[in-house]
Image (cartoon, rainbow, N blue to C red; front, side, top):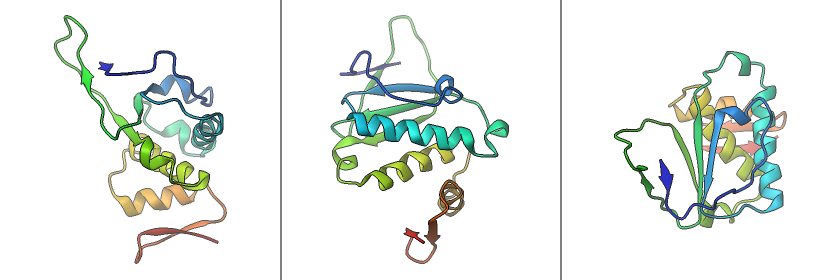
Length: 144
């Protein structure tokens, strides 16, 4: 699939064990700090004790600057199948780094753990941090 307005050669950072599991596309360039943050999320994923046993399907990560994206088929391609984690960069920039990290990890949990339940996803995300918990009543993470 081809992402409309994709930045060819868009750079990102990722842990070496996670890199082969990602297909990264973007219509906006992440800052160096955001690239590091994304890399930190992949390192946390790779270091999770369950990582060796998680599904190893490729995740297409898309950062879009407009909150929309268009995928098209290349010539002669008849079908496609895939898993996507898309981030709206115009909203992403309003979050602090910890919130951004949590957002990326949530999408990783949905994909690699094959988890659809938001409460279960949040519990797993909290495992990446020693100082984070999830309040079921408010639906928000809380710092310990």
